[in-house]
Length: 171
Image (cartoon, rainbow, N blue to C red; front, side, top):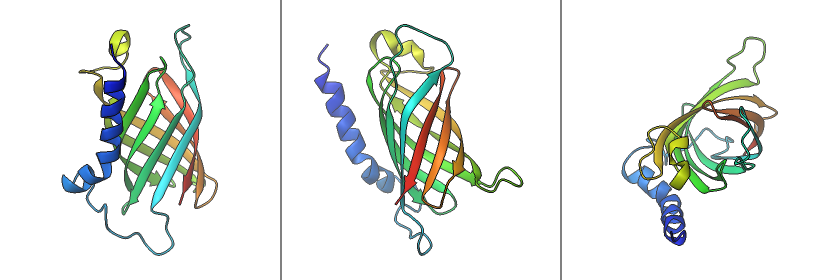
């Protein structure tokens, strides 16, 4: 199988995401301003993912995502990563964040994203539910600790497979 074609499609999809989100109104408020001084974007980087069950096939997962922050603690974004089996993958999503969810710990927040993942193909297509041609719907809950207005530590629960640890930075 020629791997250039799926990568080209993936690159095109990621480049088209902001235009598509605005054009189809999947992210209402994309162009609305945030309050003075608030960062418009957030980047997430994960250097480590822990799989609940050991497999010789598992590879280390690295992920980076970019989100456009929206009013009402919402966001829209995309992520690129190598999945647990070393395949180039992507995730387009909408997200929500709930700050101050633990009384007495105002820096703790809960978050969730929902969207479409691409990348589990070939012999790994059954590793994610509802996978159709490499595309599957997903929901990713998270818990984070805000270090400052611009930085946080975050853990994302990847279904029954793993937990991802990372850092966020707003700009």
